[in-house]
Every structure is written in C-alpha cells, then in structure tokens.
Length: 166
Length: 287
Image 1 (spheres, rainbow over the protein chains, first blue to last red):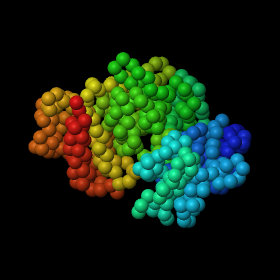
Image 2 (cartoon, rainbow over the protein chains, first blue to last red):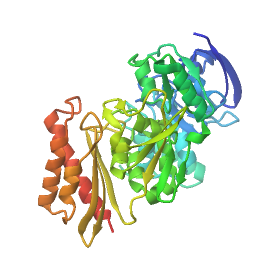
Image 3 (cartoon, rainbow over the protein chains, first blue to last red):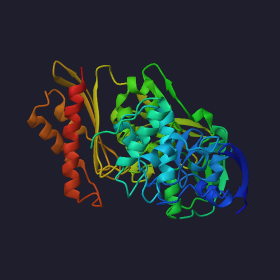
Image 4 (cartoon, each protein chain N blue to C red):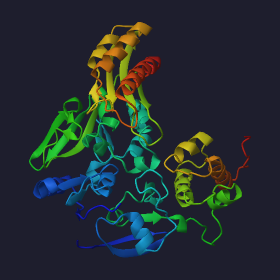
C-alpha cells in the first residue's frame, strides 16, 4: 500500500513521516518519532493509556489514524514539563500525592488531566472523577490520582490544597 | 490489532465526499469519529478498501437554530453537544444523554451523525432521535432526501441509507417549553453500552400527561419507540398502576439478546424499570 507523507506539530516541534494510511497515531508517535511515553494498553479504546492531546481534544491515539492528524498540533507526556525542564504542576501533583504505582496509566492520566484543567481549572472531585473516566488505573483505586489533580489545580490557581479527609 | 490496508481520501466538501462514495462503491466507508469503525477494523471485522474521512468538511460541523428546530451537522461531536448552550436550553435531553455516551475521550471524537447512521442498536442517539421526532438528511450526488428517524432503522446495522448516500444532518424539533424529559441508562460501567435504556419526553397540564414519547435503547435489533406504553400514560396522572401498565407495554416489544449484560428476562425486566424511572423523572421536571 502506498505510503502517505504527513506533517504535524508534536510537542511544539514540526515533524513529518511516511505512513501507511492504516498506521495508528500511537504507532506513529512511538515507532516513527520514538516518543514512547505514550503507552499502548488495551488497544481497544477502553483504557486511555494512549491518550494524547490532539488540537485541544483528549483522544485515544490507538483509535485515530496518523493520517487523520495531518496538520494537527499534538501534545504527549513528553511535552508536559515546564519549558525550563521542571515538573509541571500535574507531574508534581502525581509525585507528591503518590498518584502512581506501576505507572503504566500515568502518561495518559496526566495528558487527560491537562486537558481537563484547561477546560475546567477548578474541578470538583466529582468532575475530576468524571473527567478521567476514560482512563483506567488498576493499581491506585484512583484516590491518589484524584488528589494529584486537585493538587495541580490548587497550585495552578494559587489556592490552598487541602487533602480531603478519608 | 492492526487494521487491514486501505486507501485514504480526505474530501473538503460534501459534494466531493458523496462523489467519492458513489465512485468507489461498496468497498468505501465514510469515516466520521471512527470510534465504532476503527475498533471493528482493528479486529478485522471490517476491512473497507477505501476510507472517506469526513473530518475536514467544515460544512458538516455545527448546530444551527431553525425556527422550530435545531439542525445538527453530522460531524458535530458529542463533546460539541455538551458544550452547546442551545442544546442545553432547547433540547436538554440531548445534553443529558450525551453525558452517558462512552467516556470523555470518545466524546471528543464521536459524532452525532456516526452515532445515528451506524445502525448499532447499542448506540444511544437513535432512540433519542426517534423520541424527539427528528429527521435525517441523506445526501447523494443527485440531491438529498429527508427520512424520519423512526423510519430509518431496519435491523442491526441495516438502515435506509442507500449506496452512495451520506447522512449529513439531523434536524431535531424543539419540544414545547416546560416539557419534561429523562434518559435513564443502566450500564455496567462508564464506557459500556446500555444493558437497557429509556428516553422519555412528555408534556403535562395540571398534573395530567398531555403528550408523551418513549424510546428504548439496546433492547431489540434497533432502537424502538414504545408507542403503546406512551399511549398508556397519556391522560393519566402517572399513578403507580399506570406506570406498571406502561412498563409492561414497553417490555412486550423488547427483544433483547442474551449477552454479557444479562439474560433476556433480566434485560427486559430492567428495561421496564428504566421506562418507569424515566417517566417519573420526566414528569417531575415538567412544568
């Protein structure tokens, strides 16, 4: 099958590649661009481990063809840190609140939470839980992931983060 | 989990898209949000030779206010529905139902047109559109025609769409102000299709039901309109006995499959409960 030339902006950098139309975006990111931070979990659109930001939308990159992203702007976990290399508020939140155990879901969680906070900078706990309902974690029981996102929200908004009583 | 090979087409206009679909014939499929089609392709349950990507056709996006209806472009996403003040104000049941479709990532990609055109009995919007009396605009090279949602579905994945036709818009009449509405969906987890779901839109006057429509999701090969159940409640005050009669009338037309969501008897039973709950909640909202 003839390959198609595609260009897009990934984490601020113009990239290009030759792909078959059937190449999934997650494979283009991981194999062509060597950005292996985006994980492949279930490959069936359920788990959200492969979540990336595509033109301001959280998408499961295992269910989007790379050719569909032609000309788009993509943000992956590799582009989340601050420009000076320090941890972004969300990354700091996951670290401080122990928001990960095995870490497999973490890139998808953080990229999804990034979009959630862009759209709703001060979400309630219920809104956070609904907001990350397309991302599965099999370790944490989600409690500390929710806290991590609350931590990041408070930090970005300059408000005080208080751990909810358990 | 790699799909079979295909040729990719990205038309910029509806007329280019329908021409491609007509020229390429049976081996071409339109690609909307892709969140039904791409998983099927990865499982090799679908192997189209050509995909016609509708994602860059601006004319298919957006919600337009007509005098007594909203026209929703086929490529309007479920996320767009949730962000629309017009939907929330005029047809709030669509807002409520969109929140129950899949998960946030899927709603950013999943489209109204794809959801209603695919003919999957598990999709939520067909029953909603039937309940609301919506109609679909089907476009081909030679022009377009309008088909009522209630006449569109023929069987699981079989619809009134003819080869070379594309569903381009959904026109939804705005229910009367003060109407009551509810979409009750029982599902095992977020992201799952309904074990059973019921949509209700009704109007009431002095505590008596004046008009009512009831739609059912995933309880037969297609979405269903429960007309007899709706007739049973019109003129009533939704007393317990009436609700029971309506649920029984709805259950009588349900023919769900036994699957991982439960045996037939269970799915019909909870289908009746969804109808009862949706009626009660819709009535409580009516003014």
